Image (cartoon, rainbow, N blue to C red; front, side, top):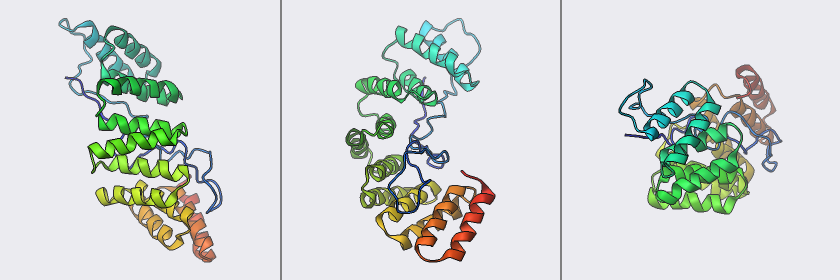
Length: 265
């Protein structure tokens, strides 16, 4: 039995591959990546099948053997070898959607979102209603600034699974980057309603409300994010900017100091 873990689940570590916060509060979104909160969920975490043994087996088919070797290589950090094994496997079994999903994740970690997108698209031809892969593809499309296509994938995912918190979160990020912060805030609030202890969702709600000019709301969201994730310097940094805009310079300076203490994450 082969399984994969979607990169769209588990929100605490979400990528922020194209949502920068290095500028002044209220500025348009920057192009500089922030490394603490990735947009595409768990692009660096490779799905592992606990049922796949790494010891040689005499009853394995060629496809099973290649899959086992690919999983073993990725679990040991041998990314190039894992990519090669997945490519071999797909030449033997082009319909192996788990392999395509895993290969897509690996390709993203090596900085090749275009081919990662191709692999997910090929997988979705076989399983068009796979919600996790739709969210993953929507995230890549967002990273590539193909916002209408990203939104289409994410809204389709939500029609299939209305309570899919990562889909709401990723949609919020895409809308925020698209420049519609009020719509982004609505999607992010839905994600929070489904996962109320998600520090990342509160952080990006703070981003969206800050951009929309709701400084009091942004402050509340960022304070909640800091409470849930106290080790993220970027939360304190943005909170400091919001406090500056609220004409509370002493409190802002305290947040900047806290950001330096915990590090730029």
